[in-house]
Length: 159
Image 1: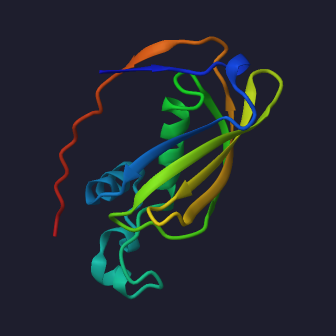
Image 2: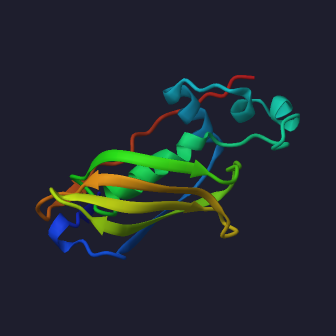
C-alpha cells in the first residue's frame, strides 16, 4: 500500500505543479461506459465510430475529467481535498491507447482554503486534449494516509 501526504492550504504556493499519468485502455472505456451509463457507440462500436469524424473509437470526454479528479484527490492538494467546481474544454479526441498526462498548477489561493488550479491534459505527443480550471477546498492540515488498493473489476466485453 502506498502512503500519500497531502499539501495543506498554508503550504500551497502559486505556480506549484503536479502531474498524473494514465494510459487509456479498452478496460477503461468499458468500465467508464458501465459506471456512467454513457454507451454512445462512438465509444463502444468500432464500425459506428469509423463513420464519424474521428474515424475510430474515442474515450469519453468525462473520462479525462475523472483523471483530473484523481490527480487533485491523490496528488495536489491530495487526500482531504474537496472539489467545488470544474470548467473543461475538450480540445482533441482521446483515443484508445493514448497515454494521458494531467498537469495541475496552483493559480490562486482564495479565502477560506479555496484554491484555483489549472487542469490541463496532454497526450503522448504533447498535444493538449483538455484545458480547464478547478476550484477546490484544500485541506487545512497536513495528513499522511495509506491509500487503499485499487478495486479489481473484471470486464466482460459482449460482441
